[in-house]
Length: 261
Image 1 (cartoon, rainbow, N blue to C red):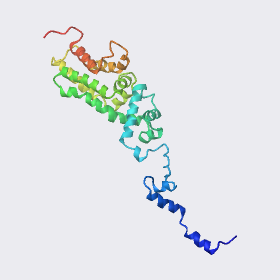
Image 2 (tube, one colour; image 1 turned 120 degrees about the horizontal axis):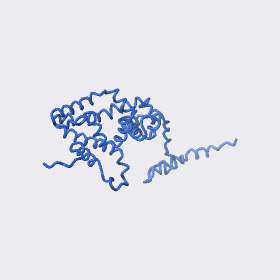
Image 3 (cartoon, rainbow, N blue to C red; image 1 turned 30 degrees about the vertical axis):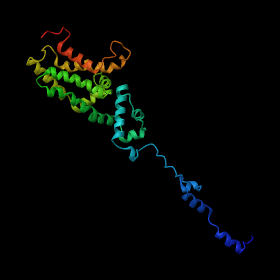
Image 4 (cartoon, one colour; image 1 turned 60 degrees about the horizontal axis):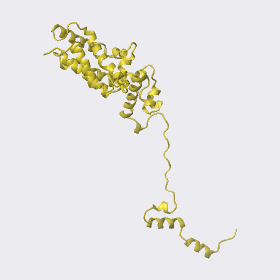
């Protein structure tokens, strides 16, 4: 191999590195970064894609868990508890089945959480009118009807789910609620109705065990079917307030003409 003359080596070593020159010139130029102007790549390697499964730290927390609970309530109201799988709930919430199983291993576990965190507070709230109006049955029943309508407005799944899983034969939710809480709440309401009848504050001909069921039928059933009224010119403008007023008027005054004061 031919040797480079010593004079040529001196000249070559004196020449500046071309890349270094480009970087120095680029740093002095306004606008673009030095690496970009010098032709040096500044692209960072892409972060590895997380595989589906156990949620990352950013994906954990109450927001994701609540989304799964909300999705479960929507599907339970739409197609029933027995016919809804955990995978369907995950897809409804926009998650993978693996993430669903991270929070809830079984449907029974999910249902227990829903009873504790969603249904129990609603159930307790429905008893408040009777507690706040121990000597005024009309006020108690009126407020209960209004509260049912309010719950339905705040939780659109409530009417359909109640019809499908509580007042229907074989409703799984009713069975689980009875197993968890018994019938102490129902007994207290029946006791108040019977006491009002003895005191002459409530019609003695009423059957105490049917008062609450009747009120539910006058409110929850119309609320559950109100979505079908969109094209009905006679009922499409009927909302929760009208349903509550009608229920109370029918219970308190009956179907006879209103008596003059």
